[in-house]
Length: 142
Image (cartoon, rainbow, N blue to C red; front, side, top):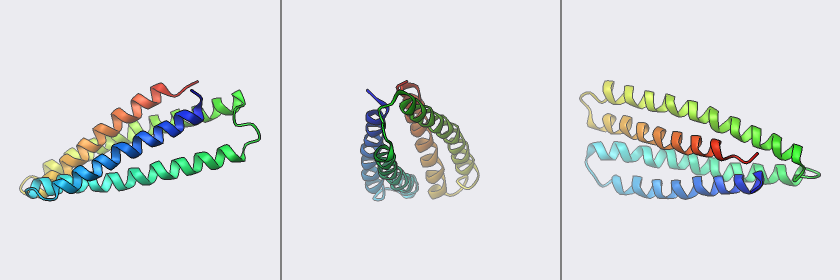
């Protein structure tokens, strides 16, 4: 698999996962105060990740079309390095999301179930994105 195919597969996986994430978030809006807060994070993160998926696909296609030879080994290697770097940076940010969500759940959510749900929802989104980013960073083709 070349970097262009991998990038398309990555965007497709992100899109599919976040369509499901969005649907779960919408279902959780029917639940208790905690679950409405939790589900709001599913919805919010899904919208952002779907935009990233679509935008990433669009920018990748534009880059591909603009290159004289997108299958040149040096071009593919540079694209792979850039993608790997972005995924590792995102994994670092994911740790910050989990930490921030934990802080929010403990502090704002101490006596407010909605905020506790938001914090826990952020934590779950961060963990899932961390796994997604690390697994894919390790799988980027050379």
